[in-house]
Image 1: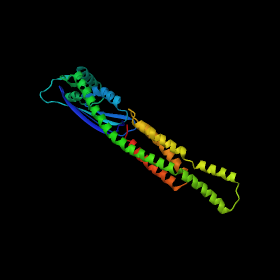
Image 2: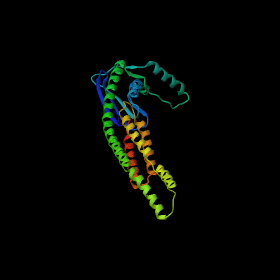
Image 3: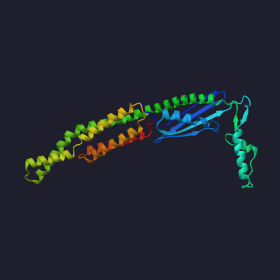
Image 4: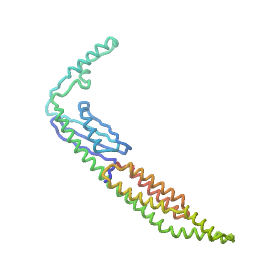
Length: 287
């Protein structure tokens, strides 16, 4: 089952410290790029969140937001980090002589990250709550990606069937095209009324037919269709694999066009390129 790179999920739960809310959204990206928005007092949770996301997601530009809303039932006791406050006091004393206009208020010191903390928050318990909430968020997020991936797979399969139909059509007209090439050459020499060695004529016809032969290109296109279907059934991220495979699709379509000796082959090449580009547009959104 392939997965889309675009998705959104949001979950929240009540904890002893307040309501914990997580939100995750993603858009297309070549690699995994994760941005986190956390309040300063919850920065300690960042490594755990990054690890959980990296274990489940391999591609996409992700934006994760974490919020903790106080229940407001009662005022919670506050504690002061005496060591951090002493450090800031010493820094002020050091630079006060150099900067005569330097002023620092007590409230400024309390506002500095790490100085003032909610003494009633059990960080171990909050970490466990955040971990469980992250698991729920990722489950919802991945389900969203898989639903979109299913829709993408259906669109791609539709194009693959159209490519197979073109391959079958070209195979069906090849005998007629070869016969037409032979007839055209023989007619041309007949119009010129030039006596030609039959053996030499046959040799030239063989060379011309070899240059116009597209059986190999058709075989490779058919093989690429099989490989694309196989890739979409793999239980892993296949976006880059499919993107590379489409380059091979396009190469065969171009070669088919360059060997075209009939308007039907030229048209087939153009239609193949259109279908391949349509698949590429969908693959850009696959993890």
